[in-house]
Image (spheres, rainbow, N blue to C red):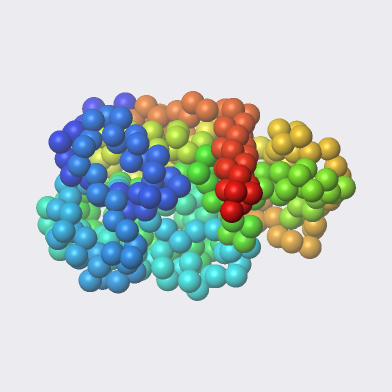
Length: 326
């Protein structure tokens, strides 16, 4: 492990996106290591797509460390429907957070979270960080991926020219309790859980799933991701990006079967090959994360899926109960 160390306890830490899915777990992980001054800015107060709002955030919160998690994200369908918005909003937020950090001048560390969508469509697996520039990303989410990749270049440039201390992390596909289960914007695991739970409840004879099932993904449980981010904030000081992953690759067909079994759905699964699969494979090399700050994922997929499903079903039961009482 890298011998450098950033003290977190006693620091003022801003977590943009801290009320969101990943952000809420990062806030908990910071509290667990003794951080007491955590600022979670609200979008209605600080719209980071506007430079003035980013400047005001630094002025109001006076942070020592900023962890930038705020992002405009979604699954394949949402990316396909909003390429301009996904590029602009992610680029604008990152651009303003980084440049206003330079202007603020007192930030000890900027922790920036990127995306596996930045990797080229046909990157050889496992994806190594040095291969980030090997080609063009998968077209269904290229605007989002390229925006995030460009911000890595900005961070490295600002480190060289302005001595802005920053690190850049690339997590695998995240999932877990509290994920976005919206039918239009969710990622693959919450989308499948919702689909199969509703099919079971409605006793549907079949479920249609996008694509062919022949592509693969790597999934990282959200609590593990939060732990990795905090470890990196403490121990990592270099300009090179670092993957955060589980080191487990699974084909979507196998994932679908696992979720259907966990839900208890026994109907037919139909594959809609007219819909896109996305990137052919995703599997991250996690050697750098372990070498530099000792990170390794601790939650296997089966356990993580059970916890995510339990959270979703408990939430559905609570909502149904409130409706019944109305």
